[in-house]
Length: 111
Image 1 (cartoon, rainbow, N blue to C red):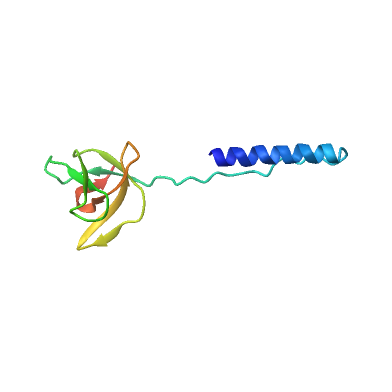
Image 2 (image 1 turned 90 degrees about the vertical axis):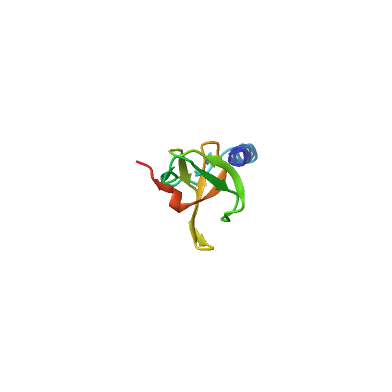
């Protein structure tokens, strides 16, 4: 966001300088700037773990543990899913903003 604010400030200064150099020139507002942010996808809930929960992984690899998440926790889909070593993986983001991978078998669509 700071980048967009800087661009807008610079466009405003350039417009002002243009007015000083050419007082009869019309004031031109800066172009509309649309900041595009990555939107989160649908939510999934940790499920099918018999109450144990599941580990989030740093990569789509069963041995790459980050930390456990309780059954019932909500995660946001954060990217494309993929298959690796016979496991269907979802890229997710937890409530703290950490991006990780979780086996899709341990999730269900949040309602």
